[in-house]
Image (tube, rainbow, N blue to C red; front, side, top):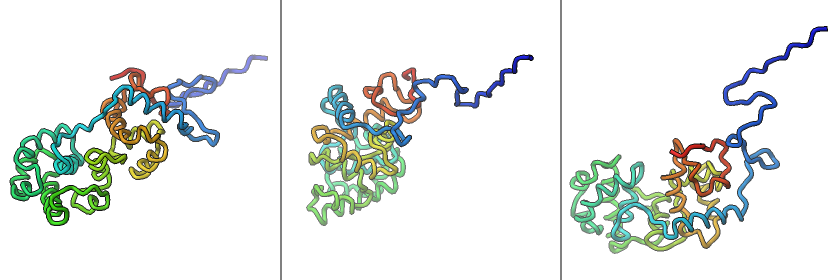
Length: 251
């Protein structure tokens, strides 16, 4: 009797043939229910311990001179890079570093100074409007209140959290695109919306790391855990990260 022919199993793109070991980089860390295993409290604390050890005093990269200019800079930074905003605000803040000076500068002149920033017309309109509101309702001072800040033109929850954290020392956590990506990709604090991620981070990040948490995560997302090709080999939390598609060569 002739031996049976060995049946070849086609290798579907992205899938290994039966009996072939999968690459460790493609293996998900599974929980008992089949999902990705959540980070333990010890792992989260260890991640932030490493971030702090590498960068004890992380700072935001937007240039500002006082709480008002910080507020303006964050409003201008929506859908724009910090470097691009800083380039425009250098001349702007030399002319207008208070709400009163900004209103006196006027919307048309403001547009000219920030025209290199995306959506500059809408942003100029919002900056003038929020400046007038600060003068009328708060004596030209930035209020240390999320509720008050969020009622101003062009100010959302993320902007309010940045101002409260940086200008007033509150332990708020601002979730931008970098923080959202890092928290979901690594499974550190997954969520469907920025608010979901923020709420999760507030729950799991140890208090001693809370104030600087979003600064570390923003910088990590901007320079290491980038959107297109993350530098996994030089990532401080590579061994803790749950992402199955880690890169093997750092860019």
